[in-house]
Amino acid sequence: MTNSIAEVKKPILSIKDLSIAYDKHYAVKNVSVEIKKNTVTAIMGPSGCGKSTLLRALNRMHELYENITTEGEALLNGQNIYDISPIKLRRHMGMVFQRPNPFPTMSIYDNVIAGYKLNGIRTKKKERDEIVERSLRDVALWDEVKDSLYKKGTFLSGGQQQRLCIARALAFSPEVILMDEPTSALDPIATSKVEDLLVKLKENYTIVLVTHNMSQAARISDYSLFMYLGELVEYGKTKNMFTNPIDPRTEEYLTGKFG
Ligand SMILES: Nc1ncnc2c1ncn2[C@@H]1O[C@H](COP(=O)(O)OP(=O)(O)OP(=O)(O)O)[C@@H](O)[C@H]1O
Image (cartoon, rainbow, N blue to C red; front, side, top):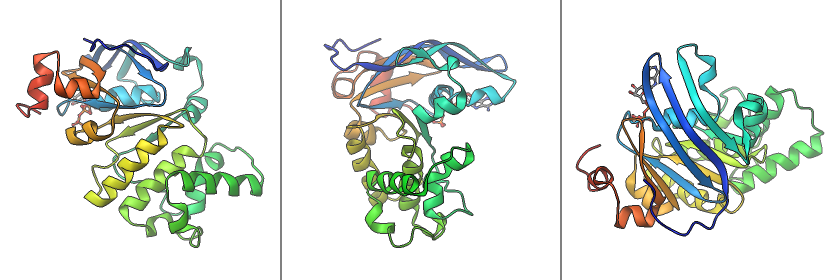
């Protein structure tokens, strides 16, 4: 069900009849939705409703597992993500996880540039320096770490580590950043910094954010999806969904009746 609003922004990602099953159990069922460019879109819903499964499918993370089947399609700028190699796709669609996970043996600098190194992409030192500075500036971390770039990433606070992981995702200048509860392991101050950052980043990127935190979705997302038992129950402008949900299940969830 879609909130009836004049849609002005262009879709960057079109998900069509996407279903994902673990063995024979469907965790995501026939989801179709268009994610608009330069927005923050929140995926909400009670535990186990398929939020992370849907997000991971967009980055083709399920293919490594034989028991997981994916049906339907997802188009990035009109191109089927299954027609792009996973490595190339991940340059266009970065991923940030729940727990900050900088590579523990690498310096801050090497963490930011890790995607290039791990994929064997050769770059000149000057170019690498520029990518590292740009990415760290984008996450408002440059001033905090510019004098300690060669210290280990794990020396940073939890919130700084998460911003470092976002910088690592930004190093390839992706179009879309997929985020799976990126603030759930952070304290309120670090959470608020990451939220401010996401609102700024949407000027240049499109953000798809799985969150358990309804007030976070209300604060920073432009559009929201509400999922229940693997189905997309409702999609629309966050403001409309929170003030005037269409489906009774959305209303029950938003008013804390379950989840
Ligand atoms: N690797 C897996 N193997 C089998 N079943 C899985 C696997 N991962 C998830 N599931 C099942 O798929 C369903 C959806 O899980 P998923 O993690 O996508 O939900 P979620 O909405 O992200 O939950 P949460 O909010 O608790 O993280 C659940 O029933 C879950 O048990």
